[in-house]
Length: 101
Image 1: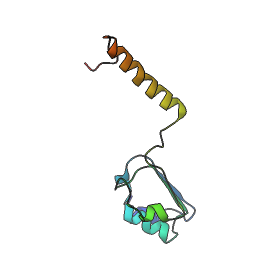
Image 2 (image 1 turned 30 degrees about the vertical axis):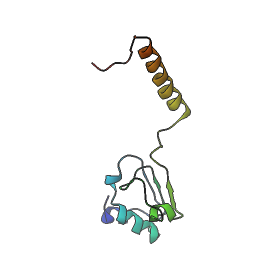
Image 3 (image 1 turned 120 degrees about the vertical axis):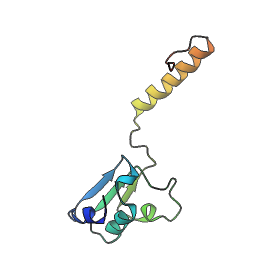
């Protein structure tokens, strides 16, 4: 989404990007939010990682940002780390599981 595409959004729009930072022109987005041409932004991905201190996406009040953790749920962590522990225990016992072929 470039500046022209963002300009098509209504003033009450809230843009959410949890996919790829490159899908949205970051400077055009910052401009749209700063100039209050859209109501707000929710971001889970960024062009620069980590965002430097004082970056506009960290300081604008209508921006909600997470450190690429939008997928995290208790169940996801339980499954992920549970399987990691199972994999280590199985490997230590000489019976690896979930191996790459």
